[in-house]
Length: 50
Image 1: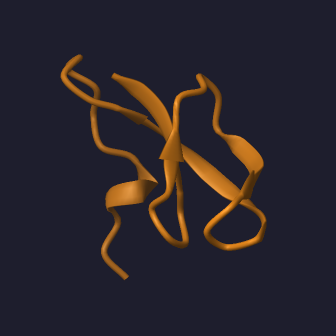
Image 2: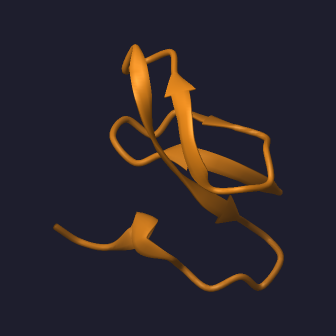
């Protein structure tokens, strides 16, 4: 599974590259982080504890 996830609210959709996209939940353009599951990928900044 490959998707990007909104760093603010967690909204996700299938696209292959990280970057800024319009988030319908936040109603603004925000940074989306690449998320890969079930492929042996290592965690990225989406998993950082604040």
